[in-house]
Length: 453
Image (cartoon, rainbow, N blue to C red; front, side):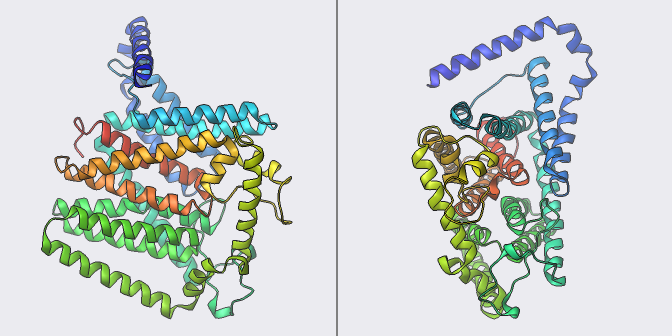
């Protein structure tokens, strides 16, 4: 497999050289090519900013435009070569199985549209990898801008909780709650308005202010570190205000892994003692908040009600129906996209309520694209953890790079935990941030010798 991929990449790079030689005169005088990285960077920033305020169609358009500029850059800019990692290779295999599911689907048109969305997301990941390879120093600015957006959304969410914004009845089951036990669920400015979407978005961005804070401490910029940690804590409070129980579980796994990694990577006993006191204080405050704030207490306890909570009961029905769909479409799935799922789900649903997804990203992957796509997805996750952990444990690597990779693994763990109970993961606002995380991981691992973290 490795030899085959090497030959393919060598052939692609050979073709790129031939194309550049044909257009050599044009390339030397092109104003676009001389400034192409600036155009790509501007569009990347614009996409992340608009993610918080605009509809999803414009986001897809910008992402595809970024991909077009990236392909132009690869074709015509001298010295640019394609390099594929094992992570990239397994994603291509996943894409192949997704394509086979489309070809096998009884709803070809809707499945093909879903497949095009998958190409958009993976194309964005590819574009980010190419961009960051040459512009890694711009990564702190990208992370900083996203952190500012997260702060805005967090403050807005806390404000919505304070004023008690109007709730949609389907957002939570209040039939067994007293009025004073109902949590006001914040939804921010993300469209379509949904507390689970906001919770997933904030969770996917949670490590960014933390990474900025820890790197600031390493660089002895304590003022910046304090601001970053305040944003980090504000983001956690905002996630709590969303009432998204899947995000609650994601935050829990995030914090548990954070504690483990911080003790594992710290050798000084005095620092470990300080961390221990900070964590005990934080967990004590969080526990007391849950104990003395009935809406939050009831919201957390509702996770364990199962059939007694209508939302959880609905998810269990969807899980059962989705498993039946998987049994009948084991090899290649039903086809990609939520439209395809919705059409096929109508034949299997056990309740009177429609469902747009399987409410579990692993089950969703298997149902849409088959068991081989699921295996590819799991191998992709395994490689991210394998290479990430190996990188972290190598003390010879740059400390800032180690902090960045650790932050990506924290995010990955939180998002994957949330994904067990929801498929909000497939919303564009979350997808683009998620693939930014994976692109940062990939470029940090592959190009660490050439980039200063």
